[in-house]
Length: 445
Image 1 (cartoon, rainbow, N blue to C red):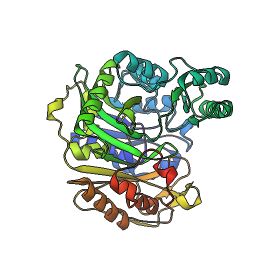
Image 2 (image 1 turned 90 degrees about the horizontal axis):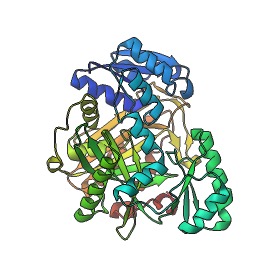
Image 3 (image 1 turned 90 degrees about the vertical axis):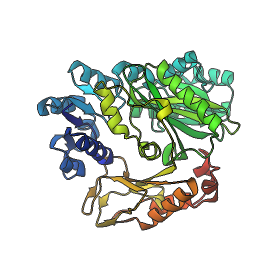
Image 4 (image 1 turned 60 degrees about the vertical axis):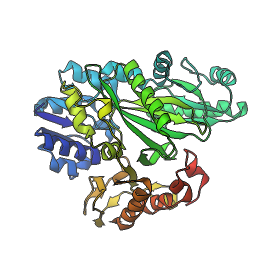
C-alpha cells in the first residue's frame, strides 16, 4: 500500500494518519464542511471535502467516499470505528472497486453484524453463549412467548444494533410489550431495521472483551483482555487491561474461547470478542466487533503491539509477525474517555470553541485527541473529544497516575466530564476492582 484514505474523523483519524506516516504510507483525509479546520485535515498529505455537516451526507455517504478514494489514487480505505466501519455494503463496494478495505471481508461483517447469526455461529463452535432466542423476533407477541421459555429477566436487543441502541431490560411479563415496542422503534430509527432478538439478562456482570488479530493464513492470536465494565447507558467510560476480575486460569479459558470464536467466523484482521462475566466465573459470548475499538490503546500499552499498523499489514497480505507464545502482558493500563458534555445537566452535549487547553504528559501518559486551542466542537458528531491513557507497573500505580493526569487537564470554553471521571477513579469500588456494569447506576458522583 502506498496511499490510504481514512474514512473517519477526530482522534481515530489522527491516530491512523500517524501510524501511516511512520510506515511511509501517504494519507488522504476526508472531511465534512463542518470539519474544514479539523486536525486530521491538516496532518494528512491530502484532504478532500465530501459534503455537508450531516453524517448522512458526508461520513456515511459511501459513494462520495469511494469517489474520493478513486480521485486521490488511494489503494485502501481505513474505516476507523463508527460510521461505515462495520457496514458490509461499504466493504462490498470497496471489493467491487478493487480498493483494499482494512478490516474483514464484507461477508464476515454481514454474518457477525447480525447478532442473532453471530450467536448461532458461536453455539455451533462450542463457545459459551447467553441463553436466548435462536430465531429473529419481529413482534411483541412472539417475543413475550419466547421470554417465558427463556426466563425472566430478559434483555431485548436489536439484531443489527450497537452502541446501546435498541436495548431494553425487562423483569416481568407485564413490562414486556411496552419495552419491546420502544426498543424496536429505536432500532428502526437508528438502523432502519426492525429485527430483534432476546437474551436472558445476566445480573451484575462484568464486561470483558478480548482483542484478537487474524491473518489470511489461518493464524489467530489474542492480545489479552480489556475490562469495560464502567458504562453509562451501555456506553463505555473507562477501560483497563488486564482485568482485576480474572485469574490466570480464567484468562486462559476466555482467551481460548476468543480465538475459537474468531476461527469459527473465518475472521481476518483486528477484531474484538465481547463476553459477559458472571460473579461466579461463568462467561458468555455477547458479540464480535469487526473493527478497531475506541479502547485499543490500553492493549497497545500492555503488549507493545501497534494495532493500527497490524491492521494495515494484515490487509496488505502479510502474515502475523508473532504467535500466541510471543504475547506477554506487561504492567497495567487504563483509558478514560473525555467527552464534551455536562454531567450535572444530564450529560448534555457541550459544543463550543476551546478557548484554552492544557493536556498532561510524562512517562506512561498518552493522549489521543484531535482538539486544539481555538478549535470549535460542533454539535453534529459524537461528544468524545479525547482519550487519556496511562500505563504503570501495576494497577494501583496506574490509578494513581490517572488521578494525577486527570487533575492536570484544562479545557476552557466548553464543559467536559473530567471531574466526573475523577469521581469514578477515586471511588472505593473502582479502587478495589469490584465494579460491574451496574456500577454507574448504583452510585452518585
